[in-house]
Length: 387
Image (cartoon, rainbow, N blue to C red; front, side, top):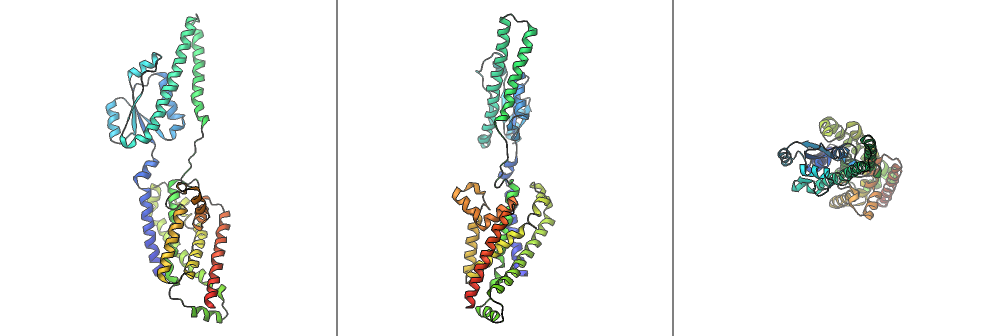
């Protein structure tokens, strides 16, 4: 027990360092940011102001974009160089004049750093699309209506209500953009956020490696011992079940000790990565038991079947890494082809991940079936050794 616990602590430290590195990496922090887009120049034009406000408050882009106003382009350029904004739009007087002149010959200019150009071009194209297609077309329609009604001899008190009515129609068309799409956060896998995904996947990976750490449980055993115990009335089935129970308890005690240490020492880390103890630590303390039973039964079958320390190490390491990779422990399974995704879902590692991610208890039945198969095969191997 002491040696197994020490090895488990070392593995937990390595997996914990891996999790910390992922959740504090620059790429992960960028994924959590809303892109800040600067707007430079006059936005006093009514239709232009409406377009910007719709983008900021009503359009689906508000989930990804924050609008930052600047009075001077120099301030915007400094903010761009300092990384305070992803890009900025320059609204010139010529652009405002082109709106008032019912022309569309002046385009918006936007500036972005080379490293941000991929995603910010998409965001800026959205803003430019609203400014050019919605604002320009709407303002043309309003001014044309006013001009035609004046030429037809309508008085001002009759023209203004019609313009207001047309403006409401334009606003309704702008707001209808939200009716065309539905915004939802898919997550990385099974609807999990990035912190939840990596804490569950790396937590399960640690449990899998912990069963590998307790390989010393199977060393030094001889067939003569099995035969002697069998001659005293304890057959292969009772031997396997009693040894497996002890093996499971060793791993369970190690896991709970390590999880308790994590709970006591990493509250601040969990809060910084968007996690809460109630959601994640409890997952890794109580709900790990079915997964631990599954993993220990798999390891017990492997170490019962394979002879030789080196063979045990190589077979377990290759199998564990392969199963973990295909089941999406290191990369979300959506990155893999459909065939590999289906294979990864039916593997023991994939079933355990889906149970931890969805908390659907039908996966416990599949895990129980795996446990029964592994223990049954272990009994057959032990029976052959006794013979």
